[in-house]
Amino acid sequence: MLLTTAACTTMADEEQPETMVSLATVQSGPKIQAEELDGAISRQPRNASLYARRAAFRLDAGQVEPALQDINQALDLDDTPGEFHFTKARALRAQGKYQAALAAADVASEHGYASPELNLLVGETHLASRNYQTAIDYLDRALQQEPDHTAALFYKGVAYIGLQDTMQALDYLRASYSRDPRQPETLHQLAFLSNAYRQPAMAAIYAARGLQLAPTYGPLWYDYGRQFELQNQPDSAVRVYARVVLLDTTFYRADYRLAMAAYKNRKYAAAIPHLQRALRRAPRLLGAREMLAESFESLGRYEEAATQYRVLVGENPGNRHWTYKVWKIGNRARGIIVDEAPRRAVVPEERLEPISSLRPKL
Image (tube, rainbow, N blue to C red; front, side, top):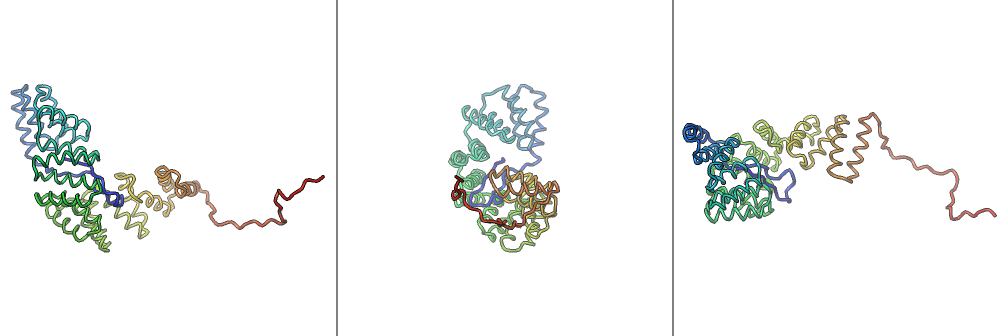
């Protein structure tokens, strides 16, 4: 299951929790189980249940499109079982089709399907759409049916992050962790929140526990590096962030942190590729485009700098500073040197009288 999360506004933009997380562990077993149904389906091509079972196995194996084809085939043969519609909702959610997934979930409910997993799916889908309170309502339904549901507790904690209720978020994430301490994603969220609220010692504990379970999981390495930075050990932090980039090229936060370290040390050429990668993933990342523009400018790459300043003007209409930068650096890119030295005031050679003091000649 995937979801989108948003952070508390009390955190800086670069401290927002990661946008896609997963509690599912895909194994080879479901793929083999799906393949074992091929023969049965070839012998009974009108058996809707066989297609539905293969669809569920394929979903568990991460084969989303084939799973959707199977469940649609099952529904064409028999559209009465609510479980079939639930499987379709799962497939649509895996494709990121939120509204279609919710519609399929509604049909599953109308056909009598009522399980904690259905409420979990609907709650998590609303969470992905940042409808936090609605998500909590459905997650509460799942927890009423199964009070110790680990995933429901986890997602409810993430929803409270979106609602800026840190204490509730930590309570539910810790509850999820206490019921299943072997979920690296739960430990990442706990470590990330601890760092965001300047508790690096606690973050280090969560991150270290997570890395024992998932030694190559980039977000946990990022959390581990961030606690070094918060404890004034920048060299150690940079080494860990560099490792994150090698493990996961999509994790833009590590690129952002490496860029900041290079920029502060005036190593502008080193900062640029990290900033470019980070901005491809998060175009509005706090301060990143400004650093990129100024890095280009410092290296005399004026046309590239002017392009970035134009983007900043588009993002901040009416901002005089960025508008001035576009004019100034744009001129430099064309070879026009702007004279910014203050000009000496010109003193008139004879006294000028106000117009009102002059009299017409008679």
